[in-house]
Each structure stands twice: as structure tokens, then as C-alpha cells.
View 1 (tube, rainbow, N blue to C red):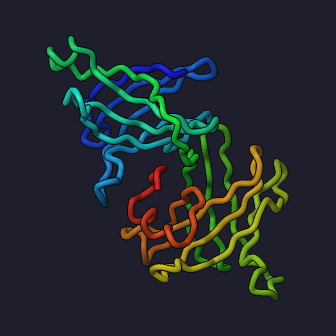
View 2: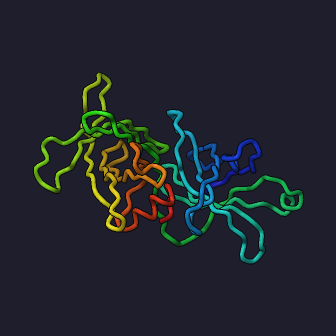
View 3: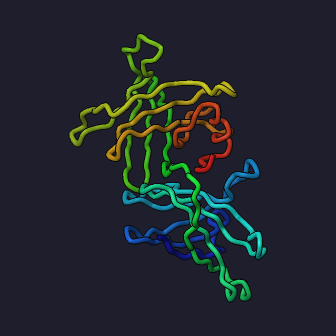
Length: 242
């Protein structure tokens, strides 16, 4: 079960709400940051938090909703802090609505539907030399910096284009995965598919470029999706619900 509070913010244009979520295993401060909607189903907000390394992580999405029976406005949120996805709603009681307060109460959302996990954030940047990339991938439970080094031993089409390496405490390279350069079936846009061994097990992610990034050196790391739906996810940003 989950609980929490959310308060409408007037401090910045980007941070629309601040609050906390709680259960028996965690107490996490969160923010809802306004994002551009690319389609009707796109989220209205990114839900972000700060992990133990001090790095901001996108942990979910939120949508402005209106109750079918009551006509009251509320927020529907999907969040994943590394323990699996969960749904909550942020609602106002009658007193808060009457006083036009910016205070909301976070309550669990009950549903029998299956949701996709996706508490992953990260970035990949092309280096100036050696056809290499530097990147990181994080969630609320781990924080991994890595390099993509060109695979000089590739002889078959199925072999990876890059090996993924991290450094040991003494600076020794350790291979933790592989990456393939591929193309979207729908648009022909190139992206990278990564398979990384993390402390929580094997992780599959894609490194894609949205409209603003295309032609540049930076890629956004998103949860793995099939190539035929990749373009929708790239255009929508890092939406958790495809």
C-alpha cells in the first residue's frame, strides 16, 4: 500500500507539483515536472526523484484527469522506484476543493491490468574519437557509468557492434554487456540496443534520439521497446505507458 501528499508549486514554471510517497520500504521526495504533450495519450508530467548518488531519475509519469462521476480534477500517476510499477491517484478532499488549496492526497489505484516496468533514466554521448560512447543508466537502486567501445572482433551480422565496459576501483576495464546499432523498422532512424548486466540482473534498454536530439551526439536511454513501436516512444519522450 502507498500513501503520500502532493502540493501544487508556484516557485518555477517547470516544477508543477512537489510531494512525497511512502510505504513500509521507502519515503521518497518527488516532483512533477511539466512536459510537452506529443499526442493525446502522452503524459502531462514527468515524475522525478533523486537517488542515493544525488542524481535525478525519472521514475514515472502523471496525467491530468477528471472524475467521470464527480467531474472533479485529479492526477493519475504511474511510478516505479525499482520494486516494480504501481499506480496511484492524487486527489483533493472537499475542504481542499472549496478553499481552492493546492494540496492533494496520494492514494492507491486499484486495477487488475498489467503495467510495463520502466524506472530507468540515462544518457549516451558520442565521443570525438575512436567511435566510442560514454553513458550512464540509473534507477532508484543502482547508478552505472559505462563506455561503449567498438567491437574489433565482429565478423558476423549478429555479433555486437560495441562492448560495454565499466572500470574497476583500480581503473581496470570490465565488460558488462554488448550493444548493437540498428534501425527502426518504421522510420529508418538509427538507435542503439543495449544489453547490460547490472546488480539487479540483465537489463535491456534502447538509446534513441528524439526530434530535438537528431543530428547531434546525445541519445536518451529508455526502457527496451520493440522497433515497430520505438518511434512513438522516441517522440513521446520517456513515457512508461506505451
